[in-house]
Length: 411
Image 1 (cartoon, rainbow, N blue to C red):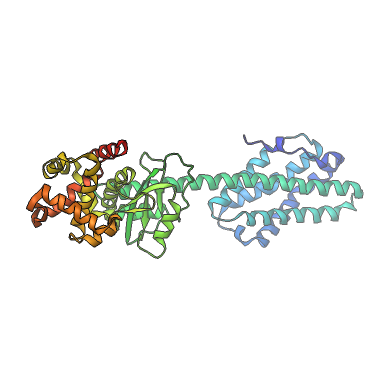
Image 2: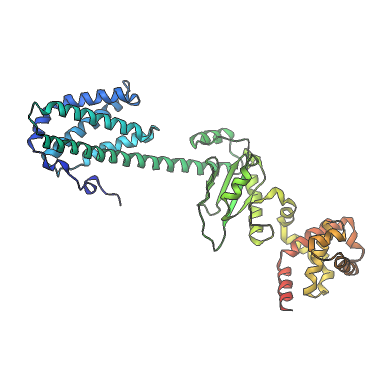
């Protein structure tokens, strides 16, 4: 809960200042305000705006309000801070909106305090103000300066948070627009990209994410040019120039706590197509069909993605093509299937297949002889090889292989 300035300010150094001092100062406030405004405008060029009447009004309101508030505190130390605090919160808010740092405002406050102290020191002898009272007033000036600076910081911070929220909202809208189908008009994308402070790149790639179960997650640290929305039902990113230097390494590091699939690199207007492929790959990575330890790049797994595009159809074909294996014991069936798939992928070269499966080449030849007995000549039929490779890939990642593995474990 945010405390008010009054709740936050236990020190009141002006309590010891005689109340009549405020009456000595009050007639000089207008002149002092003018002197402070002149000093601020001369010392802080960013505030010199002769054509901006509203801004000049705000500066005058801040200076005059602070002076009156300070004098009122001398007369009544328990008087409310809120009127002047509200003004300085508004000033801090305006500074943030105009893109300036708080350093400019802090400089102006110090200049104003310096003018006030200089004027006070000059008038102290005229009004016979004791050194002790003068010290109390000086302490009060700097304590007061701290409080109005804090109020300005509150306004500044609030504006920055609001600005960040608005920018984030625009970026989410831009992400939705880029991933929409049919593709949005280029001008609409360009207009929203400008508001979202996003440079439209030449190419993009979509990434879909899923939290790894049982792990502690951190929000990925991503470059500002990556559009991200991790709060949607399907968390996703849009990565500009994904093939650029260091981009892959950056994504690998940032997404290590996520299962992540990246669609192919496409033109900006085809971002939705990249997203479609990423959505196809993510479930396969979660199932273990595709490796999920690092970033899954669809471009590296297109054959598998195409095969699993209609998994039900491929399984129906598998029932027919792999029928000869039904009579083999489950413990041995999976080994034959893996051997056959590796043979198809390596041109039936026993040495290469053995290296892939980490077995002896003679073991491969023995299994291949068994497969020839089961499948006959169709094993080497060029027209069925691609079909066989597809159905074997699906079978090894389906319920049949799981049941065989369980049976193998029981044996």
